[in-house]
Image 1: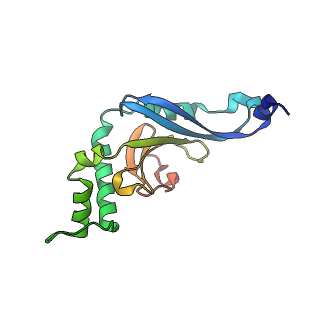
Image 2: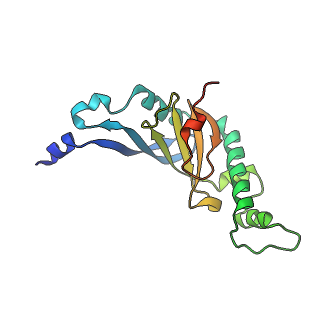
Image 3: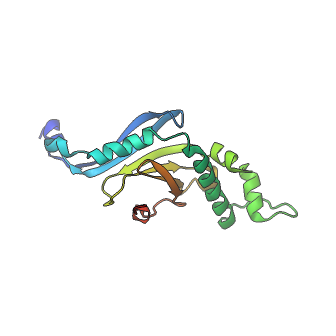
Length: 174
């Protein structure tokens, strides 16, 4: 079997590509999960909805930044309240306050500054009505599970907290 025969006859469901994000001012990896396809039926590789989801990320409005800061700070607070990182707790301080101090998080702005985006996930295999994009961060306070911010139809909604929530939770009409 030749390389071309393998490529044409294999089922492909994921791809990766790097794009420049004007919003984040850097190159960001997109993890793309599509319905099963092979190179025999390239017209079915991605849907128009999928293309719109990619462009939802690429056209993320600058107005989203204030909510993004709030959500990342909220996630940080939740993690610092629920996780023992083993930092020394000073007199008059709670463990949560010690965690925030050690991570250098004092407000929404500092949480945003310490939360570099790692990658973006667009998954067409989820059976949902709306378009979804997951912005995946691995901030210092949660470098194991990360924090995913959710875009629905181009609008920033909320965060998952630990990775792996159900996108259907956000699939409703307003």
